[in-house]
Length: 334
Ligand code: P6P
Image (cartoon, rainbow, N blue to C red; front, side, top):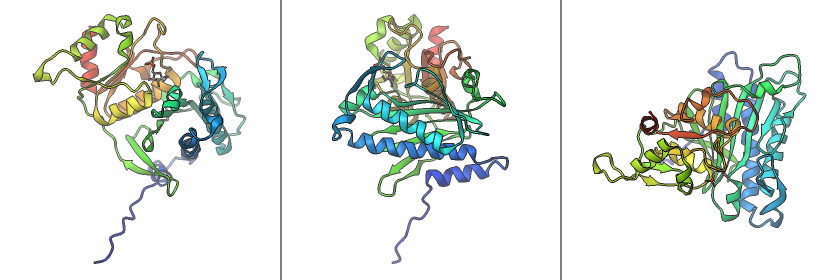
């Protein structure tokens, strides 16, 4: 019997080309920027898989970043390689990174796109081999005939052109959206390509998983405490108590929520009265993906995507996931 050869391999670059052809006005610049993400993700992935063997890649640099967090060697590595990839790709006019106090201005004639990025989120988990991620958000600049400005980065999340994350785990994946659904690509290290593995990802409207750091429960707003108590009551008809699953690495918790349904909660706490997670390069990109996959994402008062940012590193509470679970939670508020 003839060998059946599976040739319908869709690589990330092939998919980007297909998507680009859907838009006759496309210049190919966004495609080039997305390819830069793919390249940098492969470089970071290679280093992460060997970090335990390269003595100078584990642990901390001894510095603290603008967030006041201890900087890990891999944070610096990821930050430098994503910035270098965007500069080499020549489609980017500016970058806001979790690892940089101020914006990175790139004097690239004609470049229309800017990137907000968390190069390596959850890096405190690297030394114990817990999944970590890169989170990115792409906007079109609004300023003209000048270098990129602060206002270019302070657009609401609804203006995002694209957003995505890389999850470095048992397999390494890129999950992203350009506003036309969400697609997931798994890295095949043997051929060095991200291959389409999760086309048109849709989040279940209902879920049975709650994801939050319960050690802060007594500090949560009342409505969140009520919702958490509701989630863990025994009620067979509504399949409660829900399961508690919390990795403590946002991309890992969000990826599970996207695939299995559930709700992810990071409310304000005493240490983080405005919430811990950053609006520009964590909550906005994650919220764009979640809404594109049919879920919901709110700060308790409004859609995360409708918030008007006022500073590069501002934080926000975030409650996101399965649409019906988020609605149930908001009912506790009202
Ligand atoms: P906590 C990792 O440090 C991070 O920024 C996110 O990836 C994660 O969701 C959150 O913080 C975990 O915070 O306070 O529960 O350790």
